[in-house]
Structures are given as structure tokens and as C-alpha cells.
Length: 335
Image (cartoon, helix red, strand yellow):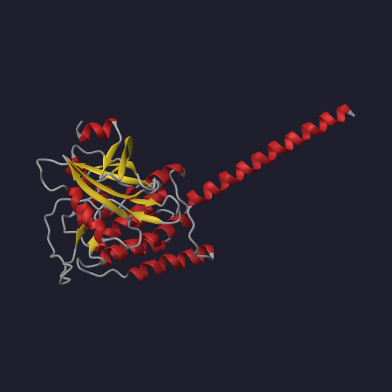
């Protein structure tokens, strides 16, 4: 039986140490699909990303694997376990994580509170900063590419490095050259204005995409959603026009002014400019302290779960009280 049939119909044995579970697809990325797997030796559940190879060319997933291994130890990076080529497939085995921010947004009725948005912003900047310190730009910052931990629901991770790129030569530190006329890489909805204009991406573009992501998570949508167009290029052009012409008042709506300042700042950066990450985090930390007097990590999904657990306890208590009342009535009747 070939690998494809095993993936779809049976448990696949990978490297005599891991199982890939049939029909347990848990996601997809820029290149390949993600399935649930398990370590045969210690029963630990893992994520297994698969790419079908074409014409025996080097798999894109192999490139992503090299970046993931290179980034090990950086904040918010999933743990790498193993990788292998089997027949016409390439497999990347890594840490199993929780739901992404898009899924969590749906659970929270399409809106995160401002406290969650600020906290997310601080963690995202930290993660992106550490990515950039490793000379890597992500190039596809969006809600689907940020996930929470399974046991660490206060911790955010960044995933899917299929479109990522080194922006400096790791040997001599030389920055990639400025280029224009580039095709759009990433997700147009969250892409920076410079990316739309065909300019080679750099650190500023990751940060602009992050700000659009935060706006989306707060409002549940972006002003350029659902634009009608005849084709992809026309749609990209319309999205660009909205991004360039929309007023800050319409774009940010009820978000604090600090977010407008962050967007103005990252758009003002030169192609090879070094972002002031500390200043960006400082603005959000100051806003968090001013609005809530504390700066501890707070996320809506954890609060929701806490309230649900509390309600379950109340319901159990109420049920117990009702039972006690019924027993008291029975005892009174007997007497």
C-alpha cells in the first residue's frame, strides 16, 4: 500500500517512532496539510505537516523545516521533533499546539476586548522581534498563523514559515537589496502597502501586517473585506486603494490612538530600517497600565473558560440545594 493510501485509510508509521493518525487533519499551511500524530514511545501527541512532492523537486516543506530548526529556542517558536522524506511525501513533525486566533475569535463572537488586543500586541511584537533578530521575516502575518499553547493558554506561538525569508546574510549580516516589481507574497488582506506596491518585503512589513491583524481581531473585520472584483489582481488593487486612502478614524474606529501611532511609525520606516520594538511595546504597555492599572497577561478565551467553569459549579450547587429542599419537604411530610 502506498503512502497516500496509508495517510487516508490507515495509521502511518513514520521512522518507526511516530504514528500519523488517519483522517485526523487538524490544519493546513502555505505548503502542505497538518495531521495529528503520536510518539510511539511516550504517547505524546504531536503535529505532522505533509507535502506531496512534485516531479522530485526539492519540497518547500524541507525549506520550512530548515527555518524551523534554525529558529529553535526563540520565543513563540514551536518545537521541532523530526523530518523525513518517504516516497512522494515530505513529513515535518513538531509540537502540537492549540487553536489559532481566527478560531478563538469565532468562539468569542467575533470580538476581542481591548485588554486582550493590547496584550496580544505586546506578545506579537516580542515574537516578531526575536524572529527579526534571527534575520528572518515571516511574510504572512495573520490571525491563522498565531496559535495558543495547549497547556500554556496565555502563551502565543507563531507558525507556518513556508513563505518566510532571511533578510540578512547570516555570515556577514548584509541586508537584502531593495527591489521593486515583486509579486505579492503573503495574504493580501493583511499585506502592507509596500508589499501591494511590489516592493521587496523587510521588517517593517511584518509589523504593518501585525497591526492590521490586531484591528481585525478587535472589530471582527477590516474595511477592505468583501470587495467585489473580476479577478485577483483587480481585488488586490482595490484593497491597496482602500488601505492608502482610508482615514485613521474609519480604520481604527474605537481603538486607542496608540495603535494609529504604531501604524504611522512602521509605515515611516525605511526599507532596511531597524524598528524600535521597545518603543512599540512601551506604548502598548503604558496603555495597558493606564487603562487597567496592571500589566498581567489577560486573554478573553481564558476568562470565558473560567466563567463557564464557575457557572458549572453554581449549577451543581443549585442542583444540590434543590435536592436538599426536596429531601426536607419529604421529611416534613413524614413527620
